[in-house]
Length: 158
Image (tube, rainbow, N blue to C red; front, side, top):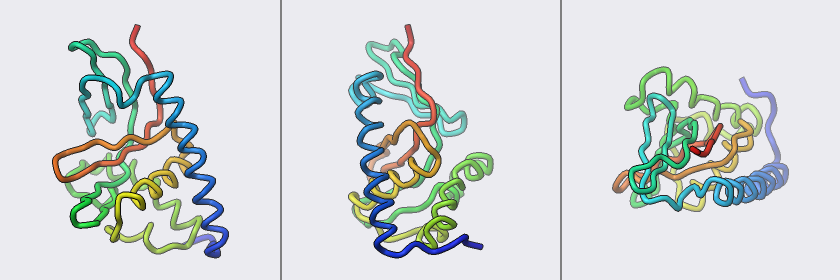
């Protein structure tokens, strides 16, 4: 049961606020942790970690929660809470995005998959980042699919 429905104008204000916050958070992840600039990374969805490496040496590690997988070619986004490829514990953690349905009243946050281009995928993840007060967002490429995750904690290795 949803709490209320936002008007389109209220939603646009909330979305812009989410995008602005995400831009600030992404800037911090970039400047303080070099996120996205390392030689390689390893993601482990089951343990909720994303580790970045330089010359085989771990440089930083993020705690993550999957939000959704996006197939740009098909303009399709599937919520992580609805993705049977994840263990139930991960799907349960990922269900935090359903708060967006309660907050906005927008059905797209309560159905398993939505039509979505890349720009909208980033907007959705900005909203997810805001609703859980995450540290930022990361897009994990897996061939033709991108998995978006929120970063809940991050630390540098000494």
